[in-house]
Image 1 (cartoon, rainbow, N blue to C red):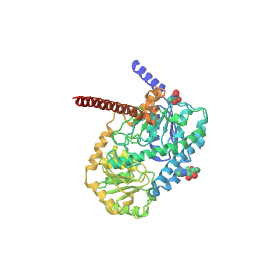
Image 2 (cartoon, rainbow, N blue to C red; image 1 turned 135 degrees about the horizontal axis):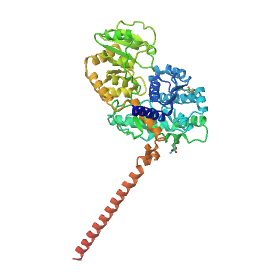
Image 3 (spheres, protein in one colour; image 1 turned 60 degrees about the vertical axis):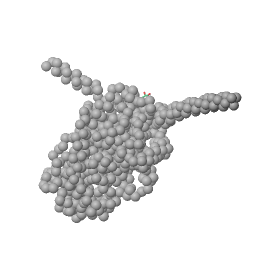
Image 4 (cartoon, rainbow, N blue to C red; image 1 turned 45 degrees about the vertical axis):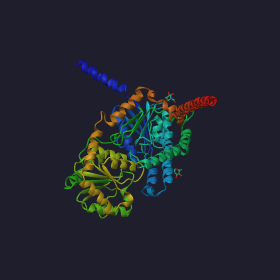
Length: 515
Ligand SMILES: *[C@@H]1O[C@H](CO)[C@@H](O)[C@H](O)[C@H]1NC(C)=O
Ligand SMILES: *[C@@H]1O[C@H](CO)[C@@H](O)[C@H](O)[C@H]1NC(C)=O
């Protein structure tokens, strides 16, 4: 008995001794990014850590070990940006790209201008680690230096050049598709050329037209003396990625880049609201769940596309759950249930939900895989094309082109998914592989965050590749010297052989002449 009490005391002591003060920085005003950030931060608070969370969203359930520093301007700004989003597909590629980067710069400045963030910076708070989202907000890495704390980066998507360079992860463009390319990991020669060009162009734009603007913001808001932003970017302890090889494809990582995809998945399903449950369970031929995520409001869909959807759904045997933000939907058929909010995990987990029509965002596709519900994706922008390319390649999804959306087109796709069970079989096999992990993604993330704290930044994980130039990293100088030498040796060898041959030949000839 005494022993048990002692053990419990020791455990409690250990837990409190290992509690760390954590600053989380997730400034991007998109609910998908917030969901990743808050899942991680709540998970860490749940492990006994003291969490402060800079966020574009207010937390509804205040908790003493989980404080939100609310950036109030971010969401109104993003709402303005989003108004233009349903037309974004029509913009020229370069304009799309520059707008995308400008939004990041504006959000970064707006975060540092925020009164609550300014107060936090002026306070004498101490943090053991700073966990910062890496999404076009590099100047915010200055927070780590301000608090003299190690820095952990988080990508709310998979890895990309913004995160790879922070820890020096190799990323061969021969089989790692650019996030925006829409290619899968298997590329033919033409696609590889396209991927190489895109990857290099992105790097060129990022380094030459973007990073110095982040450095200006960094220099403006953080006081001297301080390392340069470039030095900070090369001194990141760890990067957490919201992906997993079982969700995407296998690829190399350095040891301080860790996959924790699916932190936001709600693993304990709850009872559905009564009306939804009744609707789903009364569907004799199953239910299709339709939600375009939080970035694209279905009420801003062009009328002709909305009519195409309505008329497609009307003729289905299946019932349809439609995430629709307005209280009513003119011409809503009887087999359609609208709601501005669905408990997505619980809906997808219901065995009578047979398919998920989605925009193909990473969170939604991950949740579909976890719950084993096949997807029909209508990608709109960003990484949605890539996610859907992977779904098609993996045989668990069908991509629908938004521009081609018509009753005929969509009915054919839904019919294919409802009559061919290979999609369901494939996604359920993936679900089993994804669930087969030693720790949950939150537990994995918590382990590595604590590891960085326990080992004072864990700088022993940092690889020497970080200190090399492009030429050195790719060994171009060594190749040049090595093969140059080999070439020289061969050249000399041939000259000597030629010389000897001529000597022998000449001496024979002179002998012949003598005779
Ligand atoms: C970013 O902010 C500047 C200055 O407020 C503004 O002129 C510009 O339109 C903004 N860019 C985007 C893409 O929102
Ligand atoms: C990285 O940051 C740590 C902690 O601030 C510091 O001790 C170390 O010198 C830095 N290393 C480099 C290479 O800048």
